[in-house]
Image (cartoon, one colour):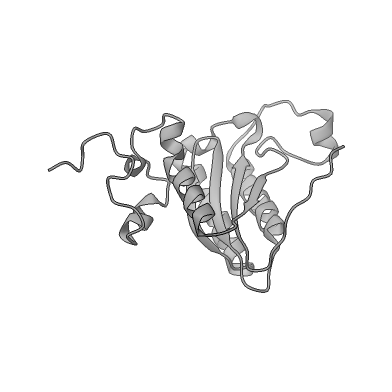
Length: 177
């Protein structure tokens, strides 16, 4: 079994990719996005952190989180988010996916992949690279033609902050004069 090593930096900024089990498109349903938002709000209330950027796609999520100066425990936050979402989701949805013996053994459901991917942001250039990745991801997956067209993204917030021009990555001519 591989050894997974994570880098825990108090006050660190991290990029995460979190994927649904078998890439099921759970987040095509706006109700599930609302369940996810409520789960995250509960976690932030108990263990604060900042969401710098986010995108919710049908079968996976990307986040940029900044932890408090004295705290490095993003794993517990992600674990709790998965648990809270799963409980609320299962209360409203029936699933007939067959689970493997391993998933039964580890008491895992058919909602999330077992692990998640994280990357500690090193500097401002790295931050910008991951902001661009997050905001272009719906385009990359051919869900929309332009970043501004995907509503489940922090792109508009960053445009308002002046980090991006409104026409960044735009091919639909919405912004032409």
